[in-house]
Image (tube, rainbow, N blue to C red):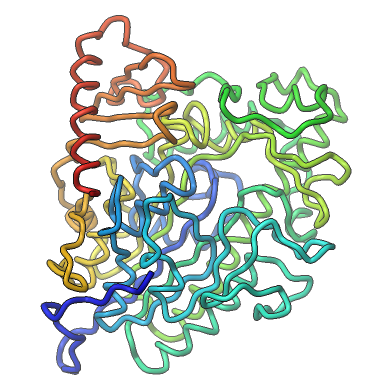
Length: 514
């Protein structure tokens, strides 16, 4: 599909040196990192660079994703819950208005996203992979998914990387740093998307990073949850009255696991008290979570490399840095086999559900679920000229809000015409008022959860949600943010009203996409 071109009604990038230079924008997304998996959201994992951004920027305690990789990324780049052929990527608009644009990392869209919004079509530079790939080069040399460099499929030997053995997160950063020289050298505003894969499975990390955490998790998932819960309260990210949700097992009946090793696999989705495990199990599970922590740590190290570059160039004060996860932590057994331990370059191991539950502290359930453990994510924004350092926003927001936020920050209006066609109306609203320390009107609704089987729909403090296509559950998030007390049997009229509203919203979004 041909790349859309902005209509003549869009003003060209100004060359007036007296006008203030637009801000640079760096958007960073981790993959399957749970709500409490970084330090400034209560984790024991070492993330000093993200902590610097979070503690000196704004943290969002009530921020929703699409609950899974592809809906989150689709909404992020298009500003839509549901779109069609008239959807457009904000990156294209930035590029047409004079930004140098770069995409380094994961790309994964739903079917409705048109090809004109794909990274290779809207960026000056792009290195992408679709969905899952291994972190180290597999012995066969054949990844689950290929890498795409500026629209062409490439192997590791064609991907610029400084350190051996090849490790995907390091290579993503290597390329981004090299690309940045171009706009920085020309004093051109830039947009950089860093789509890290960490800590999505397979659990693979450099040995020196794993060694940093080995033994840390012998205390077990029960204690880790309690410690993270206490830190979240101390930080003011959750209210002191918040209850810690009971431990969750993975009850997703629509996602199975590979065949074989059935006795071992039966334990993976089920919560068990840590003290009931054998010493051998505890040691193996300590390794599993140590690898996961090492992957988060490595991502933070690479973010630090980007920050050092921006700081050396004197650009930190005029650079917006946004970071978030695409959804909650992943509990699914996608282990190919158990021949190699977690972390091994030749292995393909995944996180046990009880560790994923700890990653999602203090919430219930996981990635794909519409419950808070799947849909609510950590998110932060750094912009020294606009944001009061150390601020926390508890106002509800959704990933569709980033598109209008970025355009407003760049001083760009959403175009009325793109290539002679009217683009689809955006379905989010700018976060700039919140970032400026003000209140904005709450969204009329928020939608998340992967498919109708795990859908959530929120209006104000009320949220209805279901799992496995069962009946709606109902929660008042103001009084019960961790969704412990289901009010569906007491507030049937509320569910009827919300379901009616949700049906109407779905119809409207579908009409807008056509």
